[in-house]
Length: 254
Length: 261
Image 1 (cartoon, helix red, strand yellow):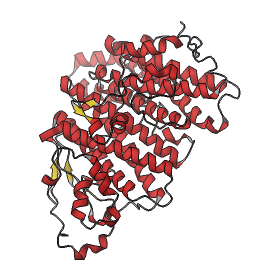
Image 2 (tube, helix red, strand yellow; image 1 turned 30 degrees about the vertical axis):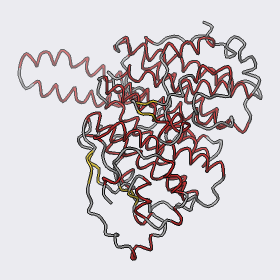
Image 3 (cartoon, chains in turn purple, blue; image 1 turned 120 degrees about the vertical axis):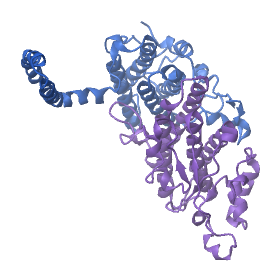
Image 4 (cartoon, chains in turn red, orange; image 1 turned 135 degrees about the vertical axis):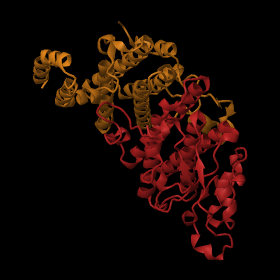
């Protein structure tokens, strides 16, 4: 599937929601992937065993994407992370884990809608400078398992918080840079709200919502550089598109 | 260790001065000896740096000192509030104690951190009236009121830090720390809201706390960088997905009723 399928203006979501309701019986994988907004790894899609009957299962060559430089590069960095989160929650809501309560469904649907909003907002804001759709692979997540899904959600949200916290100082001191910093600030606190909610669902009324594993003795949340966020033990474990971040401010390493 | 360092440097001074005049090779000796002194004192320095990534005190520009003192004032308010709440017999239900102890721990740490960063420039702790002149008269006796005020403080704290990010851009280390506090406040806000039966995020400018309606004004913004974000998924998602900032003046107007002197 080509990127040009996915890089138009943000699609109205209503058809997507309608479609996702039918995903379990979807017969056109390509149509599903198009609406999902990303090229989800084949093995992660229900019915992957049908690969042999699909004429178009050839694995595309591993093409990479360069986030670019300056403020645009940082917005693309955010866009990449929001693509990952949106793809994850889209699949979570489309394929509820065993025993998902109505409260959990509501929460996860809300979060999906927030992440899709973040993703499509950033895409629109970036316009022609936006990177293409990333390929993701969620085969390490068991979507039927509550613990697996919520554990991954916790990882994604905490990672997102640390990424925005780390990117903030990299925006340029300029009218645009300050505006983008402000936008990142508007998003990161929502990611932190998500993180706390997921953590609370995993371990209700404990200290985990802002646990000592993410908040240090000075009361400060985690900060990560782009190079850490995107490496193979973090986002890189799920994003199969090779992402070049070295043109970001500070080379993406500070 | 400080004593040892001072002794070493003190004994070096005359010798170094003499050698610098007498022969060029002294630079090498000096470098080695100062190097030793630096190594000896390194743990002390590391301790200071770990305590505060920007322990620059009065050397900071006034504009940044002003922002940090604004933040410190808000942290004084929050930390004092939770200390008072946790000390009030039977106020916080036992099921919620762990959460509020964790929040209190963070707010106390934020105060200490900001005080350290500001050094002698730190403002003194004001005196507070957590009833806000009677608006929340039973705040320290009624759990529901206490938690409502807690939610308002946390949601407003998020907006306050967010509003100052642009004013801290000239100092990346301080900007980062401010945002590290900002996201912790957002975690607190989410948790308190959930305990109160609310969603962890803010829909439109809605709040069930009538007396705190002004604290949520503007959260219903649907235009971000010229993009109508309510048209992407829904109005609710568009407003929930973006928390909105408040200016310093807006925040001070909201918290002034809690500050008596």
